[in-house]
Length: 256
Image (tube, rainbow, N blue to C red; front, side, top):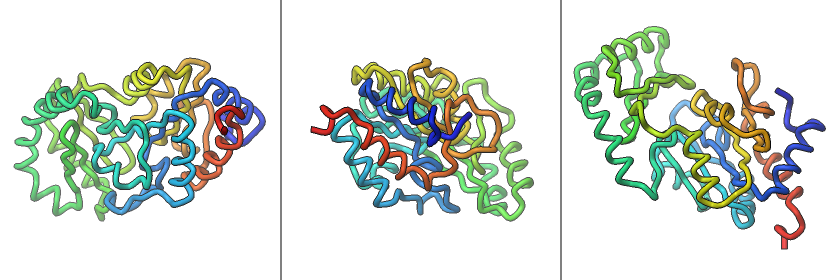
């Protein structure tokens, strides 16, 4: 991967914007820095203002592991699309999300027996309906917390998909749409010719892998393992600069 703010990245960004793309962003670790307590996450005023300006000119989506209602109040603007639960929660198909949530009912029962041990170890269980997240960032002994999570999820049900993240273990229904399916569906829904997608974590990699060559994919953070994104930024602190660059590179007709 190359840094986006080098020559090839600038050319790729300009080319993508000429196609009037869908702009799609993860939230935590992308638009907002990772924080110790997920409830404290917010985007900066500079990022919110630039996203608002872009959303007036291009279709813009937030595709997040959070629930739709949770992330909506953290943005400071109203995007055209919000998809939550790692791709499983589409407000335009609420019945599907409800059906997916029922798949995890056996896990909810299973986790009750481990609640006290998980809580004592600093693990927070977040039930998001169509997914369940077990956070261990605040655990004093993260290795022990992760082992307790592994034990609590055993035996794994074939109907569940378990995947990691940044100090979190996520569980979704195995047949739930992921972020890749969500972004491709949004591109078709709004009639965009391509997408620009930025994300930072394991659940963003399916978008990077499935992106056609004319899409622009951006990994936030370097040195965190192999990624299939075309370009990277060092951290969310560079996001305001990226959005400002997008506004400057928009074709003249889009700025009118």
